[in-house]
Image (cartoon, rainbow, N blue to C red; front, side, top):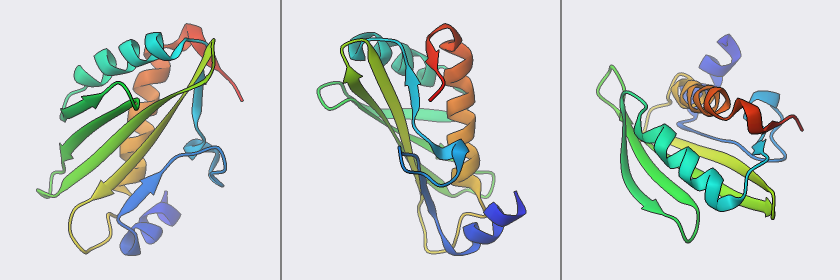
Length: 129
């Protein structure tokens, strides 16, 4: 976590993906159709405390949210639901803090919190890649 805080002194965003070096930032896969994954992800993130869903764009599979930090900064978060094949979907998350200073690792922690919540809700469908 110290390394993340040090990186966060300079960087004010974090993203997940297939090629992420950090295993905790790799895309999460679920054995669900894109439509079903979309429904589950939207209903899950809407119930998360401290997060506000601003837009849902089902056609591109993006949910745009915002979260205020204790210090009053605003974080912009995009959760993407991607149909990998007819029976499998991936979820990726991009989080960025507004302002010029680094985030002290808060975007990283937000991504992990969202993934933990989704994995708990969708445990029966989680695919370990």
